[in-house]
Image (cartoon, rainbow, N blue to C red; front, side):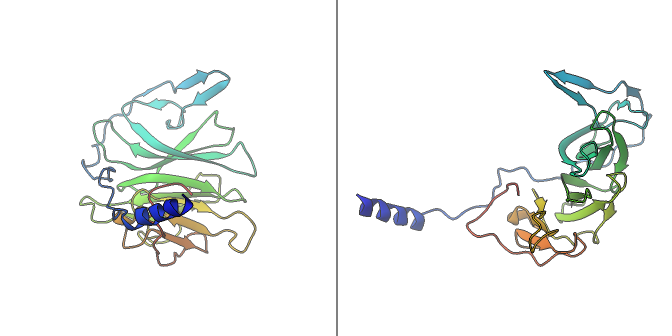
Length: 238
């Protein structure tokens, strides 16, 4: 019985189909141009109660009000491990519900999420797939996918904030982080030999240039040449 099972397993591995690109997964696509300028109107921000939890709206104007007619999705939140009252959220920013042109928006809080400040977007260009992390010192990192009108490339950039998410600085030139669509990353905070290293993974079929994985040993200023992950790894978290 054991021998038959072993032979079946080997046979199954031999006859396993070759992995095909995940074309059923929606790719980022530049569909519409940026929305034209418009008069900004506001309403009271949303405060939502669910049991013992209270949710406070983060994408608000300078006075803390909801901005009518804009939208945000795919949020990614990080908390400063040295001060739990300091957090930042990144999201896909849509300046108008009449256009799916998206940018890299973010907000930060200093009082545990009760009040939020929305400084704007990283750049006035097409960006998507936001991912955020914080290191052990409380610096925030923002990984962002960039493309163009022809979606001729899918490349990632890392931005860092050393002031609690108030401002972000791009760590390397555009597209220098390699990467690709459906990216994710993490920071080594173990205190070992890789402490502070950044590790990034993305969908290899839609890479900036090649590969599926790379790392940075200098907080995202430079990135090593991408490599492939064994055993056909697909999208996931790190």
